[in-house]
Every structure is written in C-alpha cells, then in structure tokens.
Amino acid sequence: MTTLVGKKAPSFEASAVINGGEIVQNFSLEQYRGKNEVILFFYPKDFTFVCPSELHAFQDAVADFESRGVKVVACSTDTEESHWGWLQVPKNKGGIQGVTYPIVADTSKTIADAYGVLMGEYDYDAEGNLVATGAMISYRGLFLIDKEGLVRHMLVNDLPLGRNVDEAIRIVDALQFNEEHGEVCPANWQKGKDGMTASFDGVADYLSNH
Image 1 (cartoon, rainbow, N blue to C red):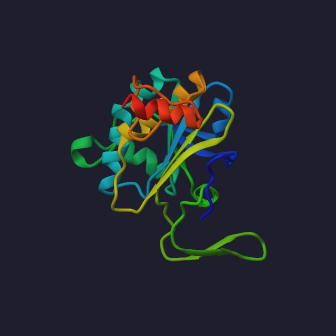
Image 2: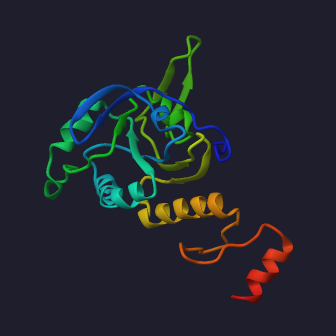
C-alpha cells in the first residue's frame, strides 16, 4: 500500500448509522471540512470479538475527542442494517449498544480500498467492478484527518491486534500543539511537555534540558 500521509483523504458518500440507531444516506466527511479534525477508523467485521472492545473504547473517549474538536467515525464493510442490528445488542452480550458516533457501511468495499486497508485477493474488471475471492474485510486502519482534509497520521494493524485509543488522543494533541505553536513533538511527547523548534539548534536545546 502507498501512504496517504500528507495527501488529501479519499472522499466518499455512503450509508451510515448515527446516534446509535438512525440510518442516514450519503454520509460524508465533507461535513467536517474547515471545522473539525476527524479520527476515521476501520474495523474488520460486526459481531466479532476484538472489534467491540475497540468500538466501546472509542465511545468511552468520545468526550475527550470532542473537547479537542475532533469527530470520531468508524467504518467496516458490513451493511448499515448489520451495524444497526449490532447497535441494539447490549455490551454484556457482545454488542455495541451505547455507541453514538457514526458507523459507515462500506458495502462496496471501495472506501477501505481507497484508504489502503482492504484485505484479500481482489482486482477490478473491465467495467471497473471490484472482483474478489474470499472474504473482503478491512484491516484495523486508523487515520487522523485535519480540518483541511489532509491525512496527518495513519496506523494499520493486522486483525488480531487491537489499537490504543490513548495513543490516538496523544497524536491529536501533538498535531494541535504543532498547529498552535509551530514546534515539533519529539519521541514519547505528551500534552503539557515541551516541543522542539525544527532546527539543529532546537534539537540541541531540547537534549540539553532533558
């Protein structure tokens, strides 16, 4: 796959479930352009095992993202009806009841493909249709998209490996620190710590004080 970092996030319109149970058509990230950063994360499949732990973890952190002006959006290759059904199942029975952020239905598989996270053997026929053998689901991709629609961070995990939501928040903090102060963030940077100026003098100053 080629990296999307520094490039415009692929646009899309698709059905989605919002507010824990409302199905909408033509959901798009364009509604956030110029107003909000977006964490867009892909997960493999509804009604599975690692996936609900991630969806609930992002829900638990929604207030933290919202306080930073960041919208959380999930996406898988399941249908909107499947998303809706899973949202009706309580957490203690393996469901995702209580999740309120949008969950996009990438039933055509083209969104996951555009973001480089679609797994499986596939190609396009002469008419431009995606042709595949085997299950077509997404890897655990995560993308931080800035207010101008540019991808500033991406992470892709294999299916068994759940993500760290605290790290996603740290990356948001780093981006916003850079945008506000013009300084860069060194390894293991955390909100409240010093940044560095992007010069050799800045590196020397940082190292001499740490």
